[in-house]
Image 1 (cartoon, rainbow, N blue to C red):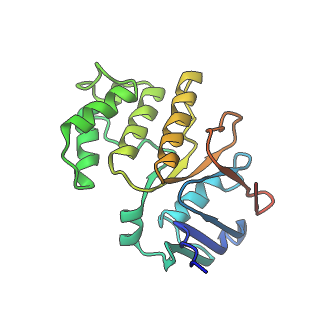
Image 2 (cartoon, rainbow, N blue to C red; image 1 turned 30 degrees about the horizontal axis):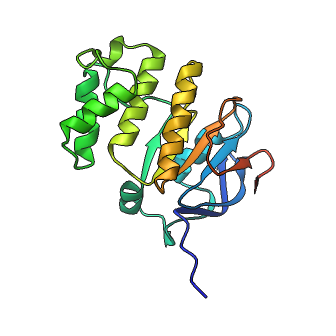
Length: 214
């Protein structure tokens, strides 16, 4: 019998508390290559906190995180995953192209043609020399999503990727996720909106009930 492939990321009895108040947990879930996990919950339910814990930015209270079968390690995470947080994460004084070039270089990539394609795809063609601080909220979100793609990591952790986008932008995000999943990647997406419906295999995790289903 063939051995099942290890999940890209897996949580086992994962809990987090703040000031002795339980924020979420215990949570058990896994994300395999070729699927998306949609984390749902109201504002304040702990979605952002969960993603920050999975990204190693906050320590869990208890439980385990495994990456491809191995206990969580920062080096392993950087090689496996890309994280899109609530804040856009790029520098306001740098231009669109400079921010994207910097993000790609951190991942060891120096392909100017790739950067041009990402800028065109995210709808920022013509804004290459515009400082990020002069972009709208929606344009900054598009730049963040372009930066997410620059590293070509198989696992995407996406915190509210639909925020600040219009309907065309929401459809564009779904197309990004669909392409990523169909190429063998995986995504964990948090949302409290009604627009998260990429046409890919999707399971849901409602952290109010602390149970995965789908």
